[in-house]
Length: 223
Image (cartoon, rainbow, N blue to C red; front, side, top):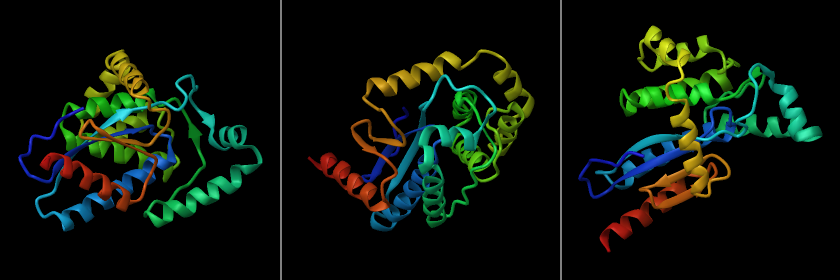
């Protein structure tokens, strides 16, 4: 996790724990963005720094699985209704969910996010945004190296340097250790949000819920 370096009275840090094949993580990302916009209206000096922590819903998953088959095995006859609800929820957040295509192990995508982090928070943010958009709206397989490299370019990373990184074993152990760290904190599902390394929010809560959490953080700062 990174600490905020700002001196603002209304500054905080949010670590977002997510998996790149989790639709609620995409919804949660949009809701956090709305919460930050509301916070800036409420507190003119509000500042938020964000980083991302990896989580794997299924670390043993193979690559190139048919997405609908996976949902069918997981949810049975409820799959169609669940995806319909998810699509409706996505529209409310400006997300055009499309649940076709392939589902793959997310280790590579988390390695890419970690790699982007070394170039700064903005690069990391762009990598996460591109991965979620490509997977959930463009039906692209984020287990495909070329898709990962396209996301890397979206984030401003050099394609061939990123390819060399992904082709190596660099970052694999680091991502796995971060996943274990999250589990050691008691995180059993995503999205999960850690505010100032102290407050936890589980699930894609409303922007108003995040504002309430921010208020608690600031109240504690005054004590």
